[in-house]
Length: 311
Length: 245
Image 1: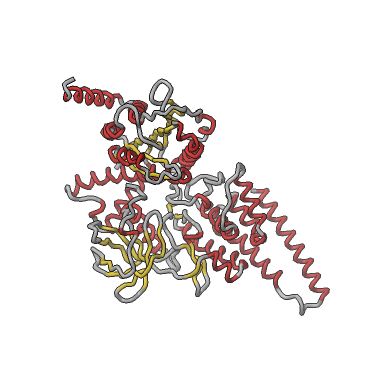
Image 2: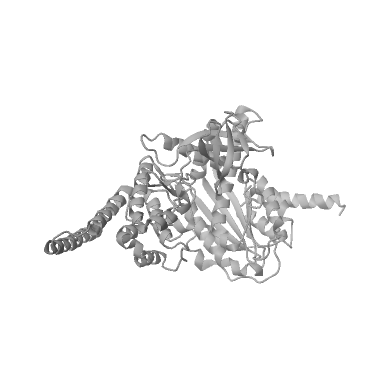
């Protein structure tokens, strides 16, 4: 029964608690809480071989089984599979007599996206989003979307610096209804589309992720929800370079992660060109180059415009 | 396996029933007809003890459904979560029954090893996505709900966005209670979408009565299940007989 008032043991494991799997008899010692969600709680746990893993435990057999199914499918992707890797699936017969299902997965260490941007500079945003788009594309290719893409579900790893999604709770098969979502990131809430799982659903959420980084306190929906989002993108200085890409994602104009990534890459290339030091270059040539860049930018905008009009 | 059509009643209320039949009894009888009763109890701020909402859990339990008590701000997410969870719960029950008939009385999804459990859950998920559903929403519109009705409306429109993203067919109807002459008033007859809801939500009645039991009974009637009404009547008669009336 869905009930918030009776938190079960699975959500309140104290550091030092030892779990032994009912089926595979492996043991894990809880180190600390990493996060708590609607479906279950995630803990940092130490295996008997001292290896640290993330352990997700729940009292909801149905939801956790379906997450495990998704992780198993992701593991079948060759090369860098999207999302965290799944290690072990088991049950824990707890002292309270209840059998809690759990699974262990790769412990992805890193920092929260917004604090990373605060520390290292917002210039990283475009690159990080582009990396995540690559991972999204892999996922879309095998027929799934992230669904519940949000700040809490992504992490920036240290070496190499990479933005990854770490929670598969919302991962949904393309064509079905999105399993789990968060209002602020949901295009249905913003009257920008339905809640059917398709790549463009994730791309909308990705644009909202960028907005969430700029507006940590979020903002309230108005009558013209889509107009508000476009205005918020325009108003944010940090996002000015990505305005076109983000506006298109919010408007549902990208059908694939690759097409959004291509546009984003164009912006990133443009950025590196503009930021190149010009001091050593002859003045006249530098001005010529500036003019050339403005011309090229104008030309590419025109092509963008024509393409959009064409579509 | 065919799941057929799921039938649910979703009751949204903020208080204790104070008129007519015991809603817990009515919910049990509705469950007997293969219809699940889910209840969302809406809290007032500063009304944390929620004693008046204890009934909420009891009704859902007897109705074989899901209950949740929330603040009005969380209504939107709760309405869709409760509906989906109830669907999964019902379908899980159906699958469990099948398992028992194949593997014996002690088997259930929970007792299977994790690998097989995953396969069974995939079936449940598939059914949840593809089954047809008929959902009757029963909204308490007594005076104390006045400030919350706007949020109820938003939550229901949002629910239809979630439900219509599924592959299976949906039918919704909405009734409010207390009604003028009867226990309920029809707000929306069976339809597939709720987007027109904004214009049809009624002016609120300001009566103090909350006839939850009779309203549930009428809700069942709207499903066209006259059988239950007869069994209710029989129950009343036998009760009278017990007391020698």
